[in-house]
Length: 104
Image 1: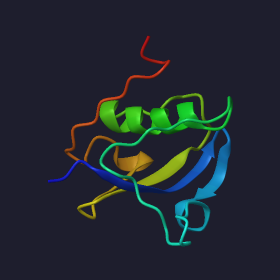
Image 2: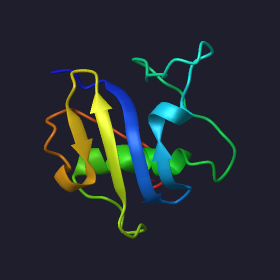
Image 3: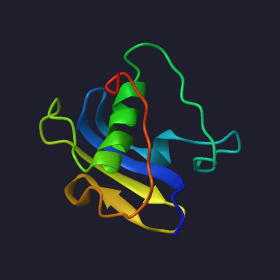
Image 4: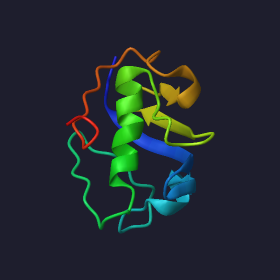
């Protein structure tokens, strides 16, 4: 059972991600849909969504989503085809570890 994330299909009602869809937004240089690699580095300007992405992953780790968001939703696809949503947190059986500003 692979724990590698392929993509975050969608994010809604979470900070800067009010209606995010991966396929039209995340493209490679050849315009194909990009996928996460085995190791990824996320960087960007302040308030660009880095912490929100880490909170989604943290929710998958702990089984609890931050109460900072009203009606949040997301869909994460793993390379083995499994999908995780906000409604079935921690049912995926994958090992996920997150260290972000909420941790300290």
